[in-house]
Amino acid sequence: MSKLERLLNPQERILWSGRPEKKAFVLPVTAAIPFGLIFLSFAIFWMWGAASAGAPDFFTLFGLPFVLVGFAITIGPLLWQILRYRNTEYMITDKRIITQTGAIGLDTRFVDFDKIQEVYVKIGIIDRLFGTGNLYAMTAGYSGFGPATSPYGYGFGGGYGFRPSLAALKEPYQVQKLLQEAIERSKAAAQI
Image 1 (tube, rainbow, N blue to C red):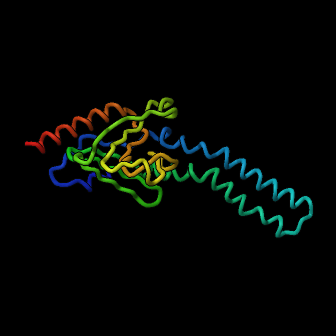
Image 2: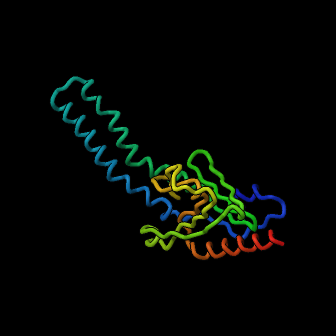
Image 3: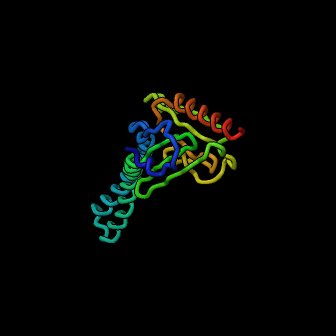
């Protein structure tokens, strides 16, 4: 049973539910690893150079916070994204989209169909490798500015209208078609 099912209203039907593909969801954040390794290497070189030159202990230990930052840059985003993956789930009902994600806390978003103005699929390089794609539901009020987020929870190019996004879907065009049909049915029912 999905964790999102408890959030459904009475008489609300699930049309689709799913989770991102793990490799396609986690792999994009590994781009930070080379930068972290460079930072980490420099900090370790600093500490080693200071220690081998006989510098005072304080001067040697000055590099320790930089070593810790290097470790954080190297493995932090990967660990964070793995934690986010465990809590990421998507659902489309006959009335709305529900997404939930988060590494430590949970970010649960509800978007009713009448708020959605456009639905589109974006397939990036990583998605091509794994046969996945990201589904975006554009809502009124999108400005192109706002929180700097991507469907993976990092980077730039987000905005308030980019929510919800369903990242790393195995069959993004099938999910888009299902969502588009559900939105059309909802709009037709509202006009009656």
